[in-house]
Structure formats: structure tokens, C-alpha cells
Length: 337
Ligand code: FO1
Image (cartoon, rainbow, N blue to C red; front, side):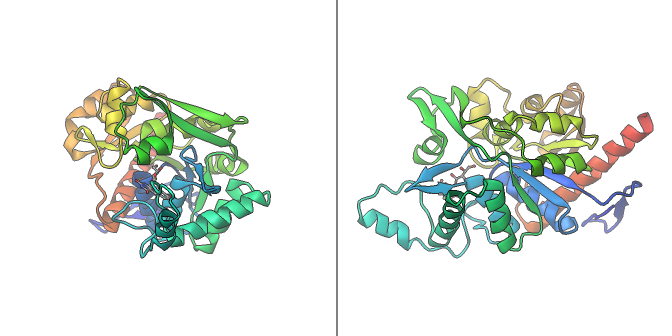
């Protein structure tokens, strides 16, 4: 397989033949951006993205799935890039009307976005699984990649705070993730287990990429789904994580504060420890280059590059660096064996 290296124009060709099968593990905004970069440089259908569904919740009886929607809209090229979630060219008449009816609209549903929630809720109530619904919606939006919910069972992230146990969106949106996070737990209906689609994607993977999402509440729930960590470990593909923490802060959301109040180091080293034993390599930003030796001590390789994605080129460039890094790990493993 070859990847166009956007800067030098050279092709970093790997020596092994199989068509690329890349599996991204992603949560919200940061993960979606790298998934978009991977989709840009790979052939159609070569990318599968396993997405967190523990942020999902019901609102006015609509089934809302924020991370699935952020990934789907981003991969469809329809995402509101400024807001980070929802659709571009959105209007808010329905939300304004709900306010006129006296509703406390703290979680805003855009008029276009509501179509997604209405149809998803309808299809789920007709008996489809969230995996089937997501495939149908993504296909309609002509997304060339496979968007795979981490499981079909309902699982909800709960956040322990000084004010008690909060639902995730209550903590994240209504209370502007301002509470100190003392612990994270998950409320489930049934046993969340790996789906056939996720199992197949991980089995066929030639590279597994942990996208730069919150390791606690975005990647964490995915690794807790029965069978997923095992399937990742059983894969012979290189496993690489991109740090969502750069220079001691998170580029988006509460990851830095959360790592801190949960007692972890707020740095790529703290993130690497979350994935120790699962990943082979870590991609960190140039700003954190001095931390590379400490990450290597955890038994993983390190790639230092620009990990801040402001443009589509940045997304594709980071994706290219990540996959070239994966190739290098594969070659190293070949040479060692
Ligand atoms: N985030 C907000 O901060 N405020 C909102 O009103 C809001 C609405 C919303 C609607 C649909 C959707 O898919 C996401 C939405 N988000 C909103 C973002 C969402 O809370 C986060 O993207 C994820 O939960 C974090 O992973």
C-alpha cells in the first residue's frame, strides 16, 4: 500500500501486499478529525471507525448519539467546523419554538440535526440495531468509510462529582463540564459486547489507530465493551495512539481536567499509561518531544510530529504520518521475527 506524503510528494510504500484495512477507534471531535484525515488518504471502504456510544441519551423521546453524529457528519463533509458538533448551515427554529413552549433547551437540536434523531429513533423503534441504523444513515450521506458503533446495547457514562452522580450530557453540556470529576462509571442495559462488524474489522485490520479523543470517557468506554480489547490484542496489526493532550492541555473538552482530577499525569505520558499493554506506539506533538524517552520506557515506540489539526491538509498529513509510523512498526516486527 502507498500513502501520498503531502509535504515531500514521495510515496512511503510498504513492502507487504494486502489492501489497507485501517480501523480507527474514536470518540467526539478530535477523533472525528483524524478519522477524516485517514479517510482522505485511503481508498474508499478501507477505513472503519469504531465509535463511542456511551454519550448517547434520550431527549424529548429522541435517541441522540453525539459521537456517532460528529463522526458521520465529519466524514460526510457536512460538519459544523466552528462548533465542532452538528451540521453546517444549521438553523434553530425548532429549538426556539420549544423555548416558546417553556422548555428548558440546554441541549440544542438544530433543525437539520433533528432529521437524524427522528429517523434514528424511528428505525430503532422499528427493531433495527444502532449498527444497522448508522450504516443506513452514513450510506445515505455517501460516507465512503464504515462507521461502527462500539456495541448495540445501551451503555451510559456517569460522572461522579462533588454534587453527586451526573449523566454525561448533564455534566458535559448543561453544567459546562465545570464539575470536578472524582470518578467515571457506566450504566448498562444488558452486557455491552463487540458487534460482528467491529469484530470483523479488527480481525482484518492492517493498522489500528486510537484517534485523539478523551482516553477516559471516549476511548475508555470502547475498551470496556466485552470482546473489543481482546480483539485488538489478538490482531497482528500495529496499534498506535495519537495523544489528545498537547503541552499539558486538551485541544477540546475536559480531557486535561479529567486526567488531573482522576490523578493521572496531564501529558502524553499520562495518556500512554492509559493504553499501556494495548498499543505499540504513540504519536505526540513536537511540543512534547522531550517526553519521548519516558514514553519509550513504557514499552512503546514514539513518533513526534505536528498533531494539531486546523485544516483538512493537517488532518491528512497527520493521518499519513500515523500510517507511515504503523508501516515502520510492521517492518520492525518483521525484522525482529
Ligand atoms: N454540545 C454543547 O456544548 N451544547 C449543545 O447544545 C450540544 C448539542 C448537541 C446536539 C447534537 C449532538 O450530536 C451534539 C451536541 N453537542 C452539544 C455536543 C455533544 O455534547 C458532544 O459532542 C459529545 O457529547 C462529546 O463527545
